[in-house]
Length: 134
Image (cartoon, rainbow, N blue to C red; front, side):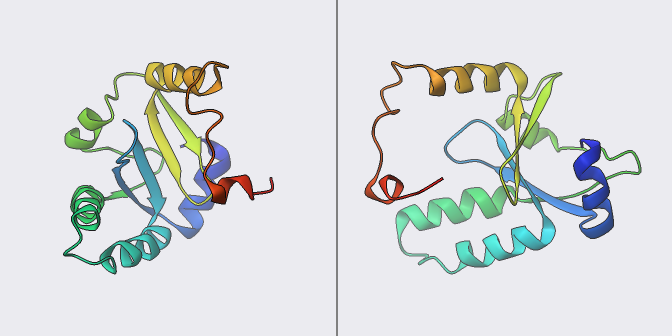
């Protein structure tokens, strides 16, 4: 964990929760209190809806409690490392209230594709995103 986040996490949130991202080959890493909010929202989804049930199974089913050690490191279970194709070098990408954990080579590949001018999804914005002001 980078030093700028390590102190905050160790002082306020010594525990973390990791789960899979269902759209990309990476992991989502939440402070426990943030994860509990997300988990309640996921659990509130209608269990008879197939897409909701899939999301519940994948996100909650892969959720794993983690703890920072005294050096600010976490040990990811094999099943999560294999899912995210994590090898030797990993990238931690801040996403507001969570982090994404990527294999470095895969992150470079995906971020290059997203930034490429010929990316077919680059110009397609939902109505919601068209009204977002950054």
